[in-house]
Length: 328
Ligand code: COA
Ligand code: MG
Image 1 (tube, helix red, strand yellow):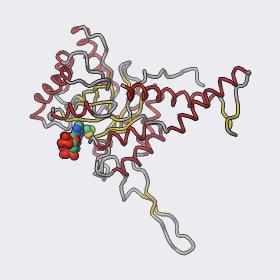
Image 2 (cartoon, rainbow, N blue to C red):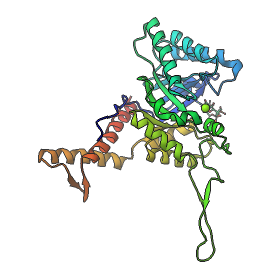
Image 3 (cartoon, rainbow, N blue to C red):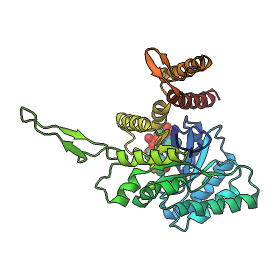
Image 4 (cartoon, protein in one colour):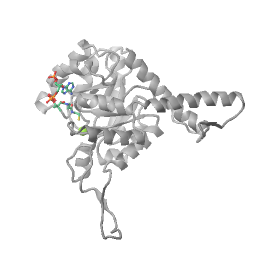
């Protein structure tokens, strides 16, 4: 192991992150009653320019009155290239009270974007005497953001998670696709001819590189990597496939842009029961082994060692959080 060890941010359950547009306050209570781990009240791209002040007022009202229980609450502010951004922060922080947990910054391009928001938050928190510092989540959704992702990931002590946003990224990169977060029939490889002269088309994952890159940058800085939206909310199988592949890569959760995606995300990002059982058995076996002075032991015919402990601990810790959430 390197002498430099990333310090992990405190764990926060983030299997599903349900978005609700700031202009539809009727959805806030419904989101609060859902099984989503994080609720994100949106002031950005689901709100038309003329509706920004009303959306802000709705969100402030919700922060003060809606019972969100033990869920984490986030507000997605407008980007730093708009004049809505400063007003979002000032009004939410001065008038929204203590309930807010997270601010989501969209379209982050350089580390200084996060620095600027951190500076503003720090001043306002001191001025209003806020007890609990607001934490940050950022969306990587531009070519500049992806290029600068390491610096962004290390930009602020408030930062907890990186999110990949495929729709804006596609626009920024000039990609010829309009499918939000799913595959594309033109992003394929054609196999060589087999002995019968037949060729097969194999679909590739258009989002592989960016998701993989995000997971690496996030984990290298102790942050949570979270996969962004899957636009076709009527395609359950497509959502599940995309979520499973993100989970395998190391993501801790995924956005839900419709309530029907919440249970699917929770299902995929909850470690499977047999995996939890095996992780618990590994920790037990290693405890026994340690008492006997052994660093590597066998469990059901397979080698387990100190690396297995680290993997098992992650799963067991995640399961503890899920059990705490689902009992309350
Ligand atoms: N949060 C909570 N409840 C929601 C919801 C949300 N985001 N979206 C829909 N619902 C509720 C509806 O009110 C409806 O409730 P009912 O059965 O009590 O009437 C039920 O879920 C089914 O909704 P449906 O009719 O299928 O959806 P819709 O046409 O009202 O809205 C969307 C569809 C996509 C416009 C809406 O889900 C939405 O705005 N999603 C978030 C978009 C967003 O914020 N995007 C920014 C991030 S990418
Ligand atoms: Mg976006």
